Image (cartoon, rainbow, N blue to C red; front, side, top):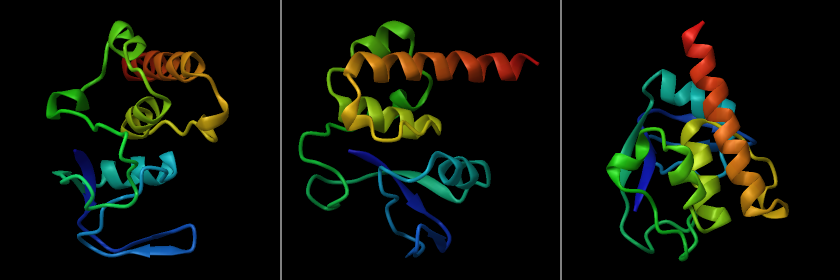
Length: 122
């Protein structure tokens, strides 16, 4: 399974994460984007069961999945948890995604990606 590991000490939401800590899947998108933009995190492979932040049903992503997914690939995601994890990797905060349908989550991701691509063209 792939996750993000901190290279620096980071405090958010009343918690402090030390260098080497694995970021929780529910980190705020603004915090994630900041860490990513400053290269304060790195992608790591985490063996199953070594991090309580991930549910057992989360399958993780392959290394190639960290590029943008096409609309068809997003629609093929079959669990809310996997869709939310992909959204977090993009810096998209879905809020309480558990209360949304998988289709709603997929649409939010697609719209977010289109907005981000539009912003880059400006």
